[in-house]
Image (tube, rainbow, N blue to C red; front, side, top):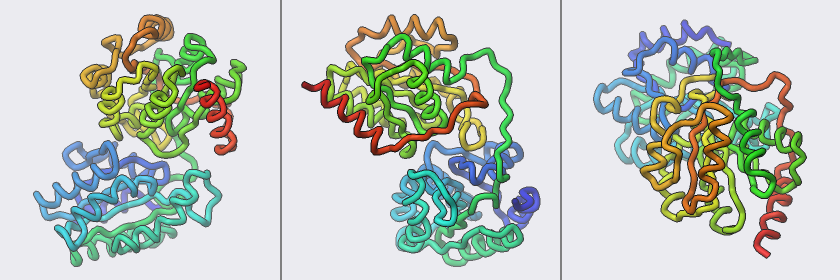
Length: 378
């Protein structure tokens, strides 16, 4: 891995002082340096990658300095609109450097949800007229950043650096979790399963919650067809849940969301309530960090998610839930409501050390779920 301090010293010498983005594990040490050493006025962790591009554009308009936007390549989709209709040279010509973690790099064996995105990443840069280089050798990283800054400044356009694994992060993430008396995510999931039972279907958000839900369903002996693991498309889980809930009004649909995920596309809360599916139970497993990509702080503990959900039209208990007994009582009290239900469950950081990796055939899981849902309509 490149010397991160040396890299940031070089960026400062070249007049780069502002950063915005969404964390990625392939950029883990780059992102952690930002959270630990750069002030909030110069580093904005955005709700999604499109927001980050827009924030960086605003900073450039105010300062004339080249900003840096960081993201996982799955976030290119979120960023495409402002990159093409705001920053592109045929519109306003706003320069910035995009630092993109290359999940699904064809040279690496990666998960299915990253494969096609990884294959298309260089092609997307080319098709969007974004000059790019690949960060693949530690000794050329600083030179490539220098090239990107110079090119962005001279051409008034976004320029990309696509980072391979191990260049801006350690080979293995080292995460340290603060002591907490809160439930774990897995414990909270278990309370919900025990209270609601196997007649519901359960959808889990991107990240470690998919592993924990899958494990809990197996341990409790739930029948097949009750699970959907949303291994990609971060921030869209409750919308998937709404689609299922509207199509299957007799089926209870439980969404296990994440705090960073729900903030990423918070407009979905308004849509979910506009269509008032009374069988939708939306639970946020809120640990206040972007855990699976390095533990950078999220907005989960900063904003009042319950208040926002209530204002959108959800039925809530009026507060965040912080222990197992309270969660069980809230579930029992809200279960018969005729509105969508929202519960913000504060949980501690971390995952059980012996938690199995998620090992599923996505298409087989889909078929089991569809079979169950179709039978609920008959």
